[in-house]
Image (cartoon, rainbow over all chains, first blue to last red):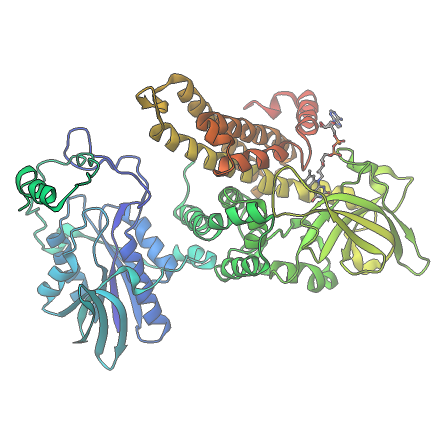
Length: 249
Length: 388
Ligand SMILES: Cc1cc2nc3c(=O)[nH]c(=O)nc-3n(C[C@H](O)[C@H](O)[C@H](O)COP(=O)(O)OP(=O)(O)OC[C@H]3O[C@@H](n4cnc5c(N)ncnc54)[C@H](O)[C@@H]3O)c2cc1C
């Protein structure tokens, strides 16, 4: 079973991001970039499937600029077998990424795609779902546990009411939640080996996919500073605040 | 500096390990004065499982096989953490052990690389510090091909934990520096006493002990390198250790302190604005930035010479006093930028300020390394500092 793991290059979770001065987006110049943390969890899970003898090959794939190679090298150092960069300088929105991933999944004959549930930059939380729809495969999002046996996977997912367990026929798309596993540190030997593992590049423009953005960003700005809360003296005052001052009721 | 993608990954991985696994242990070490043995063990096991133990030792002996430059890059990251944590997580596997002959390897080098044994270097004596050739600890032939060692050492780092010691000893009192030899002496050898822990200003958790030798029997199998080769071996191999364990780590400490300064300058408000708006605070930040970058370049330049087989001793001497003095200045500025909070033991700055002070002293004082550099300048002229 081939497992495909999409990984996204995002601003590192330690970075305090700021909007660009013209409000057109987030300032990424001279910002430390890393693999999206949820994607690390996805890579870890795929590598564990490989180690357990369930997966035959783990392929990391990233869509974007040439610098995404670094993110792919990290996936290789964590244990992925090879990597594919779908290279483009164009702005990629979730749907475009899902379409590109579909092409790669088809081409590679992947049986399972494990995505992070969302990327910490736009928090869109939709690529896995769109990809499953485009592939017409089953999907299980927010996985906190995953096991594979005889062409079926069992996924435990965290839902509002508790835990839900789904059984899916392969091929399928799974998205990883925080508690699925604790990603490993890349080991020194694997870091040194990562360079020798294959990293292929596909040109997005040659894949016959329309990646044009469907959503326009009008402006990006820092949210207004939160005002401190207030204490109310009575229920009557509370109702008054909710009704008249804040119009919540 | 343009790092390769492997170097970046290496640095990031080690940094993450330091931040997640090591820094959270620091408060407890500071409060209790020690790193609990079970935590030390767990830390070692985790680092070792990730191939992070003994990264500086060639692969053929079971180490990580990093070049000198790569070693300095990871050592800088180690430097963010307290000394004792670095020792337990990444090991003090000194390159001088590579001088072990085949028979000695099994007993001393290989188990040390695996982390089964640990070692200290014992050179300094109460009456021989900067003048390391003036040691009085001596080995007298026992008439059966071996020796009996008598004398004493002090300030020996990590001595309480170590299983064996690389000890500098006079084997020929008439030959000066050429009469000094190195012996590998196991803890538990009759007559060898590991004495009290000498309390220090900082470096909490690391022991620094006195050693006493009373006719300690050693044989040819304990002699590291040839007889009379000790001082030469020290000069040859301890330079790289100094560059890694003192210079590169000092850069890391400066970086951690500057990170704290930069964030506080933006958060702390007085007179209605962040203190980072005041030019006198900005000067402290700007000077630290430039001095830290200059420090790293000195360290990596010396390391690059080592990798290229060029004698790097003068450059290591330059780095030793410059980088350790930069750390001193950065630590001092960090206290100043934090004001009272910098002096208060609730934050790590207070302890880092104390830890920083030793960097100008151990492994050769600033004065000694300045002397080396000045003498070399007078001997080699522009070759030392120019481009011709
Ligand atoms: C925390 C700590 C850990 C240590 N760990 C170890 C260890 O693991 N193994 C080990 O062997 N040693 C260790 N040492 C010893 C350390 O290397 C020595 O303290 C250091 O080399 C200085 O020697 P000294 O203390 O005897 O000072 P001294 O040599 O007595 O120097 C006193 C002062 O005189 C100055 N001075 C001396 N000679 C000259 C000169 N020619 N020109 C100008 N000024 C001069 C010095 O710079 C210094 O300012 C450690 C020391 C400490 C404090």
